Amino acid sequence: MSRTTFDLDALRSFVTGMELGSFAKASERLGRSTSAVSAQLKKLEDQAGTAIFRKAGRGLMLTEAGEVMLGYARRLIDLNDEAASAVRDVELEGWVRLGLQEDFGEMVLPQVLGRFARAHPKVKIEARITRSQELAERVVTGNLDLALAWDNGAAPPNSDAVADVQLRWIGPANVDIADWHVSPLPLVSLEAPCLLRTIATERLDRADRPWRLAFSSPSLAGIWAAVAAGLGLTIRTDIGLPPTVKALSSDTTGLPALPKIGLRLHRKDAEADPVTQRLADILLQAAHAALPGNQGQARLRSVA
Image (cartoon, rainbow, N blue to C red; front, side, top):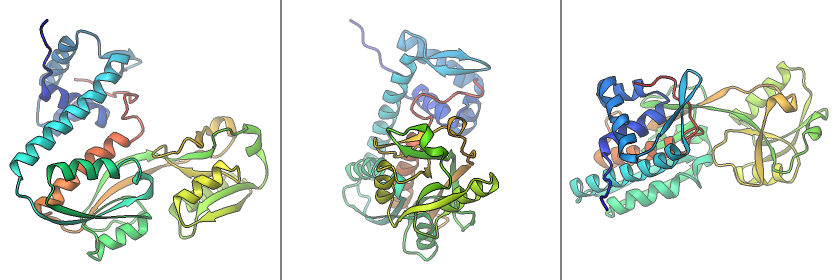
């Protein structure tokens, strides 16, 4: 029986297109023509022996086989890049200080640390998980080398946009929709100052919806516990939600619509050293994979 060996370049184009939501953008990112990317995708479907995409309005969606392929494609590319980095930078040594927003602590940090440590066992990492404002400040003051944090509206130097992520109203997993038509609406929030708390109260005020602060906590774990207990609603993204809570639809609850929030990668230096740059690459790959819609559900706006 013949074995199929998937083309890694084709897999990379596939994954990049899904992450960017467009294979036209993927061709620009990878420095390839749109026709070349189109040919790679066709080759990938031929190798898979089944359709990876299906029509969805003006765009395309992944088939069930495509969703399975996407998961394996990410793993194959990650392993390839890890191997290339380990061989090329076998003597890489040093120390790097990493900061993460709490939402990414459980989902992204273990993956990032594991991949980096396997490839560069001589490098020491110091990780700090805290709130966005503190992370950005610590990078600016030189106390962190890298940080992944929500955009608070400031524009510090050496900061790059990663993605815009939809904010959602979050309630307990067993929520009764009728419970959230009460007035004033009970809110659960991090202690002030809190960017998301400000967004929630401003949106409610604009909608003339009375609210009260039912519970505040210095940590995200406290927020999840309070929401799960039914003390009130909070706002976050879909990233890192525990099974005890769930995102609610503004349409069914009558709650005001929420905006998207920017995710940014902050760097201490404009030109990072090899250790920091390698960690930044792994961090960005893991962050993109964790974003909503990057598990095979994203609609491609344009396809080469």
